[in-house]
Length: 189
Image 1 (cartoon, helix red, strand yellow):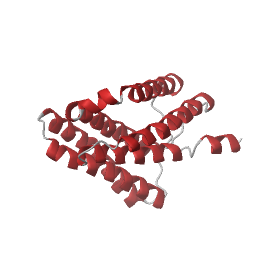
Image 2: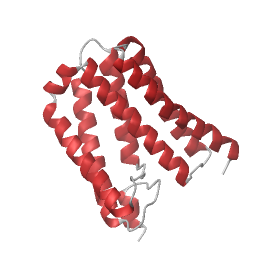
Image 3: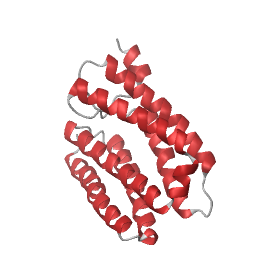
Image 4: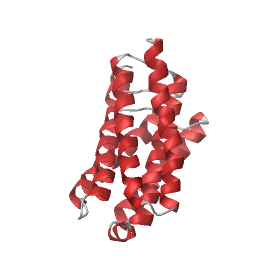
C-alpha cells in the first residue's frame, strides 16, 4: 500500500466528514446559494478519493469505515437539504423515497445485527448508485426544474444495490470491506 496516498485519501474523506457540519450549518442558516456548491464539492471529493484508492490500491478497514461514515453523512446532508430547500419534491416523490428508506433501514439493521457495525461493501452496484444519486442531488439544486427522470433511474439502481447488500449481509458470515458484488461472492466459493 502506498503510504502517501493512504494519508491523502483519508484526508479527503475527513474533509467530507467536516464538510457535513458546514452543510448542516448552511441548511440551518438557509444559505442554499453556498450549500449547493459545498454539496457538489463533497460529492466530487467522494469520486476523487474513491478513484485514488483504486489507482493506488489503498484498502484498509479504517479507510472503509471512514469512507462509509463520510458517504452516509454527505447523503444525510443532501436529504436534509431537500427537505428544507425542496420540500415539494419530497411530497411529489414520497412513495419511492419511502421504499428507499425502508430498504436502507433494513440493510443497516441487518448489518448491525450480523456484524455489530455498518456494512462497507462498496460494491460496483453501490458505486454506480452513488454516482447517480450524487448527480441527481447536484442537479436538483442547480437546475430550474426537477430532474425527475434521473431520480427514477437512481431509485431503480439504488433499490437493486440495497437488495444486493441485504443479500450480502445474509450470506457473508464476517464483515469485510470492498466486496465487488454478489456475482463475485457467489463465484468465489
